[in-house]
Amino acid sequence: MEHKRILELALETLEKRRTQVEADVEALRAEMRGGGKATLKRKAETTASPSGRRRTRTPAERKAQSKRMKAYWAAKKAAVAAKAKKPAQSGPKGRAKSAG
Image (cartoon, rainbow, N blue to C red; front, side, top):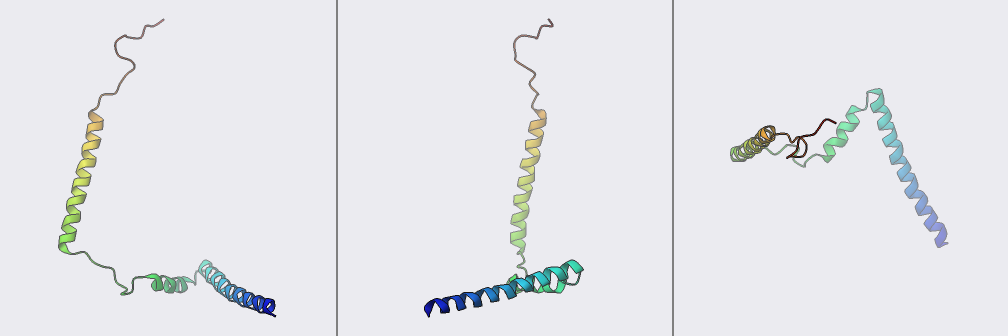
């Protein structure tokens, strides 16, 4: 008797999964046809932040970010300039290659 109940529960679970998979397949088909954007939008809304709005940065945070980025790009520019000034090495030093 217990084995039969386990099988019934397994069947119920699989049927619920099948229903969900069929709904997902239908949503994808609708999207491929071009009409499923509303369904995908609803899914995206449920995963968004609870308030629904993006958190904005304060003026102090923006200023700090600006300083960090200016320092980042200055260092990057200096690294490129240093690399450009570095002379290219041409073979071993000391003796010139002989032709022959």
